[in-house]
Image (cartoon, rainbow, N blue to C red):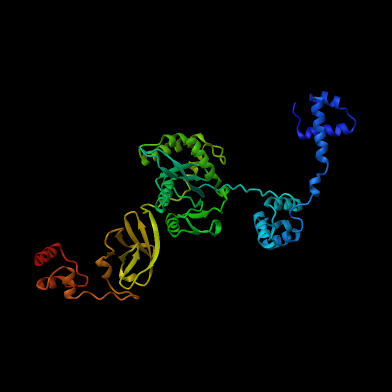
Amino acid sequence: MKLTREEVRVLGRMRERGASVRSLSKQTGVTEGALRYRLKRLQEASMPDGRAGQATALDGYEEAVEAIQERLGDGRLTGEGRPCQVRLIYEALVRDHGYRGSYQSVVRHLRRKHGKPRVRAIRRVETPPGVQAQHDWFEERVPIGTRRPMLGLLLGALSYSRARFCWPSEDQTQLSWHTGHHELFRRYEGVPLWVRIDNPKTAVTRGAGPTAELNRSYAAYARMCGFGVDACRAGKGSDKGKVERSVRTLRESFGEVLRRGAGSLEELGRLLDGRSEALLDRLRCPVTGGSVREALAEERRVLQPLPSGAELFDVEVAREVSRDCLVAFEGHRYSVPFAWVGRLVDVRGTARDVVVRGGGEEIARHRRGTRALLLLQKSHYDGRSTDRVIRPTPLGRRGRLQVAGVGAAGERAAAALAPQEGLERPLSEYARLVELLG
């Protein structure tokens, strides 16, 4: 029979009151030798440790340590606030006071002086339906056809219902980050009020947590979809514990799918969706006590609708429109309506086009990534003057001939090309114009 520490203490008190070891041995079923050994260890543990009085490497540095603690605002001195890192105290001792002892001796000194640091309790938070989702990448090498690439798998978990979905990608670019969010929202059948994320460069350019500075493109995408971004604190995986737990669940429950792989990325996505559907019935929601599918049905009723016709983009920058009605983007220049000269517009790069937005609306669109470095639309230079911008000087007769590709001999076409305010030509007029130019 194995005695617990508390049982040994009780037997020790009985021994002090005169009970014999033999009688105690019979009562507990433990041999006399084992019982004598445990009682001896108990007595030795109560005696003071002689090592406490031995000299240490910190002798003579006590005042220096306390001064460093005061300078760093160490909460150990006052019993309030957060204790500073022992590593900082050790480095200051070495740098400023020539300390040659070990790091562990500093740890032992602080523990003897202040005792063990208090344990900080963790707040458990449960959000209402439709309020929060947690998104995070994890990587896995998965067979795709004859290849075995390292895939990025964007995992999303709705915090209330615990519904989990996964979207695979060959990369983790800005466009993939936005596309992955969109695919997860489509599986949720709506958009939550907040999305809690880690701090990848596709989301955060500087800082972490409440002070994080969001990537401009991601911030614009969040505004478009109508959710707030809640970045985790640095090194605090517990801030997104539901998705962290989901990663472990995914590796266990989806392990077979990921090990087997698929013929294509699209097929792998369908297999992952099928496994997610199965988990909705198998897992229970701890908040409601019912299945995750039942909790998800409740949550879907309060999610925001996904913006219809939303066009995904990987870059958004602010640009001022020059006097010649152009904005610069990715080494190209694109025309915009002259009324926006001197004003800031948002330039977005989508998978196919460059979209210029002003006043919350699209004002120009051009093909992205062409060989041509200058892309113009004639209509951007036409129209009436505004209170702020005078319209560009209209083209004269020769200018119109040259823009139309007509030589000086095409005088008959000049009259046909003459601008007339508010004129809408019938189709027959354009046919006559073609004859003249021919």
